[in-house]
Length: 463
Image (cartoon, rainbow, N blue to C red; front, side):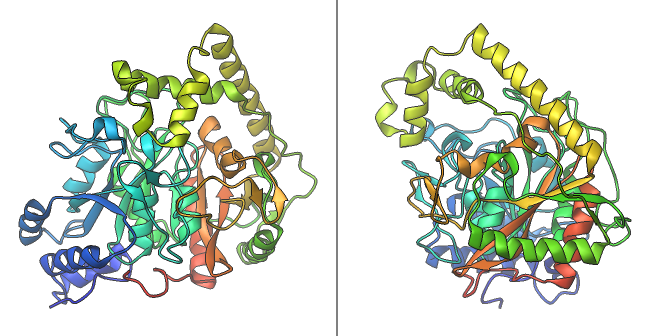
């Protein structure tokens, strides 16, 4: 009998299944037992009986055959809760399954639970009225970040090896950085968001938080490729996992930037990240380019206003009566932006997007890569609020997403890779490339993984 969940990566778990050293049912039972005693509050719904039945019939010849899969509660599984992590939708059920989840099911993954997220995916801390606060397995007083905090906490906490995630402003990379995981935000459209996709700000991509580079590569092997229900999704690209270790990165030009997006980064953390960046530049044979002007145009409040419009429309006539059961950040955002979206704001959004696109194109004409931080500092308190001081330096609360949001607005990829610890908490190095450069980013992440290996789970896991 397997006493605890697998603490390696998902790919090695599949190997254990195929070798008959573990079984999918034993693995799921170990995961369910670990969740019962966990203090992380990483899961909001478990489909126990159906998942056990699927485990008994698992086809371990498939890429993720028999692997327990946590599905972020902002993704949909038909018949499961579709709460948006929000009290007004506590009783709503999904009447369809997301394309990404469907593809993972076809690849053998056993979707068994929903992982906690921030309300509507709108904040970088996973703490809601509906579910309470999710906690970082490295130190439960701290947050795993958001919005994909439950997936990150569970995977880093040794509860299960795969959790889905989404990134509309950093919600894959931020929790990956806070919990010591790999988090790839891909080129916009790489994995379809359908069916019933609504594009909104055109910033959201979907993916995973994983323990290893090859887990992420296999995830994209399984999930990428055009689907007609998401017309903006990209054509399929094969060979993500098989290409690892073969991509030529020598000579690529790189800028190493501590203040990407205008963020204020903790000096103590940057010292750790710079050591990792210097190692990568040397080991990969990159060409460092200094004095590159990487200052980006300000995104402005108009962008936040447009995002709140989507949430306001979703709430419909439940607003404003539901205000008191929303998280403080969502309530304040809706109140602040009410009635402020119009033709002037819309024009500002497109003006800012065009300016960012032009500047990013200029940067990637001068360099092939940008290396920076995934977060401004180590993970803050699990209950929040978003910090206004980073490493002793005053900074606005919005500072927390400045490092990640440029990739969302421009639609290009970025990956967060574990790069050490500060005060016992993980810090993430973010490597950013132009559109369609994911395989290069994975190759660089692989170099760091092989030469500067990181713990696959937090000390003491499973929690």
